[in-house]
Length: 77
Image (cartoon, rainbow, N blue to C red; front, side, top):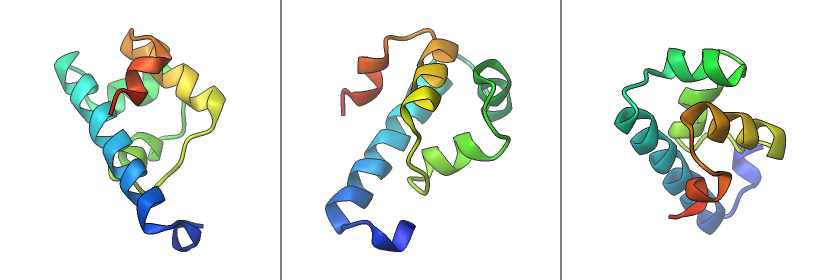
């Protein structure tokens, strides 16, 4: 699936992942903390932060809630 994305789409995923990482670190959370709080698969957060994974809407909602932010803050790239 990653090979199907355009260069622009890959860049969006990278920037989104950097945003998630920044907020997570500001909250003093590890990736494992976020996985636990969001209730997502174990390697998902790392893959999102590296721009290797596109999360679905439900996963985005869970991540935002676990980070204590509004979901739109995740998209403030």
